[in-house]
Image (cartoon, rainbow, N blue to C red; front, side, top):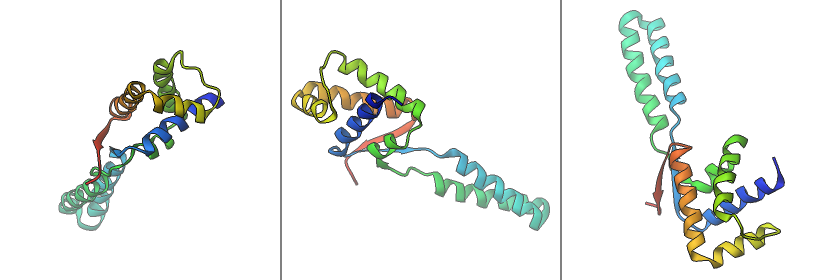
Length: 142
């Protein structure tokens, strides 16, 4: 990954650290494994009725495991794949376009000083989370 991509991803995280934007990314694979595992174990232990009971209990466990688990958006961004980070980099760089910067602190200061640009960057980050990561986004903590 180019150092500039890393700088822009770190910039996004630094900007988000001062917000209360949180996101929940669904983990449907875990839920499917719990449901299927419950049905298999139930079937082995109780035959056809066990499949029904195990599948039902597995589904309940799967739901508990995958219900909305909100975390700060900057943490989710740090855990993204390189491909996702490159997409986010492209989206942010489109907005930063002609802004001149040589290092990360300079970039952060330039954006913080421009309230309109700061709002636009936050909007890009929120939209990216919703559209690319299929995350549920909320502002502020409960």
